[in-house]
Length: 200
Image (cartoon, rainbow, N blue to C red; front, side):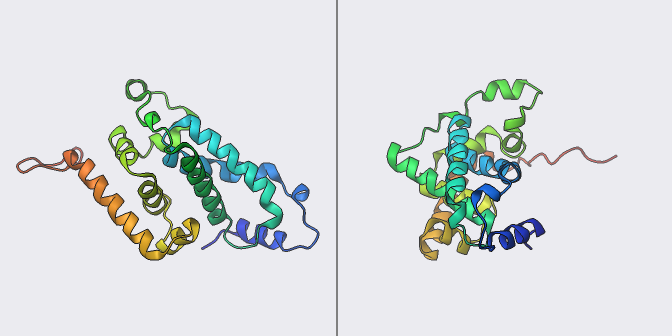
C-alpha cells in the first residue's frame, strides 16, 4: 500500500499552478536521500561514486519535477537512479568496483559505525559485497533492484525499459553467479552452519 505522503504529493502535483519553486525541496531530499544513496551504493560499489550518483539523481529530479506525472514517486526515483548509473557505465565502460572492499579491515576492527555507511553495513558483509561486484553491470542492476530493493519483475522491466523475459534471464543468471561465487560459504558435508547459541 502506498503511503499517504505519496498520495498527497501526487494530488499536489496535479494542481495546474504547481511549479518546482512551490515544492518543499528539503522535505523531498530528506525523505528520499537515504533510499537513493542505498541504491546508488549497491549499484556502484563504493562511497564516492554513490555520493556522486546520489547528487546527480537529485539534480535530475529537481530539473524534472515539472514533468513528473502523478503515480509511483519511489519508482520514478528508482528509474532515474538506475538510468543515470547505466549512463555512467556506458561512458566509463565499467564503474570502478574496488570500493567494495576498501577499508574492510578497518571496519571489521572498529566498533564505530559511520552514519553514511550504516545502511549497507547493517546488511552485507565483505563476501557478499565482493560477490555483487563480480557480476556484470546488467546482472547486478537486476539483482539489486529485485532482491535488495524489492521491485517486482514488472517494475524492473519498466525501470530498465527491457522485456520481462530479459529481466527474468538477468536475475536468474545473476543469482546463479552469486551462488557460485559464494559456494565456499555453503555448509559442507559433516559440517553444520552455526545458527547461534543453544538455549539453556
